[in-house]
Length: 413
Image (cartoon, rainbow, N blue to C red; front, top):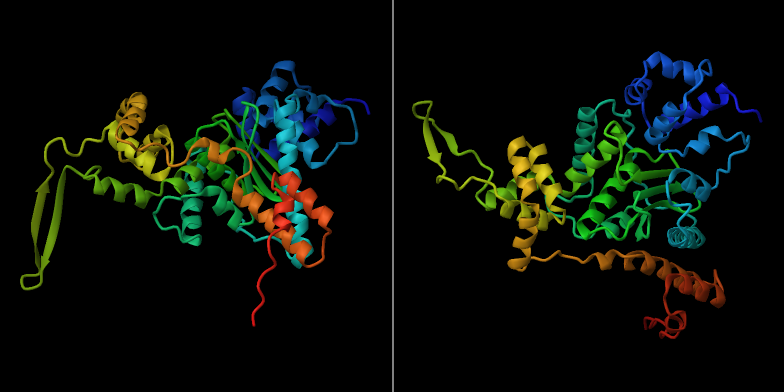
């Protein structure tokens, strides 16, 4: 197939629409008029090398993808992943880790369907338009996070185990040795179901944020088979901005943040005016209370306590306070400068991270345990052979012979 302006334009349009971006946004980032984007996508105008480089970064596709003259695209799940996940195809260890995870997900899907023939638990799909500004992205993320907290009956409490929560929603979740260019990947494919991978070398709090971020893609962007989250996304990638806003609001609910600050006697106005209604006079008595001087000042100690309570990083907690309009921009800058002091403070008072990063390295026991349970049940029902069960256990890193040596369940009299 001859490489033409029309073919390149068609691929540029496909990549833009898959990224949820408008022609206006693409034009702003690349630095050309919107009409130029329309002409390029229609094949009426050639694209320069510099412009193609900018499109590549914006749409998160390698330049080769736009310039390939091959008429047939390999649409297998791994082919899509290696095409979109920059740096993954050239990293043998990361590839092996990812492929092992997807293999386990396939086993889980196969066993679930073998046992009862039903599909996995269904999560809501919020059909809202792609955001066209950072403000709209933030509003959408905050709104959907609040609705999900209500649906999941989480209240304002911290989420103790995100992989377990995701598994309960029919989403496989684990960590993998992803290259430093990536922070997470969301899959939605019939062969593996819905699945999330995040980079295991990140700190525990960062992993939690990545899990929540990919959960947003599962809820809002599951029309795509693979959604790749780069470690550093463009400021104009409003779909990623929305997912970040969702993650912050899911992990740090507004009500929970304010309640904790109230318990610390922080974050309230320096002066409180409470009118007390008097039925006899149909008037009110003003009950005024001033806070003790300096008691309302938020410090890095308070932010550190907030971060520890909700299992997030210190910067995530600080930015959330700004997002809730609890601190000003200058105060946020001051708090961020004290990030290391906040970490040392928690260490000194004995509040180490609730869960070490090693706990979330590789396949969480919730995932491997679930697949092992499915395999053992399938074997008990005669759906799979002993050898097949042992193969599954080997993939999971479980001692299959010990599993088979367990006594049979006691039957009721």
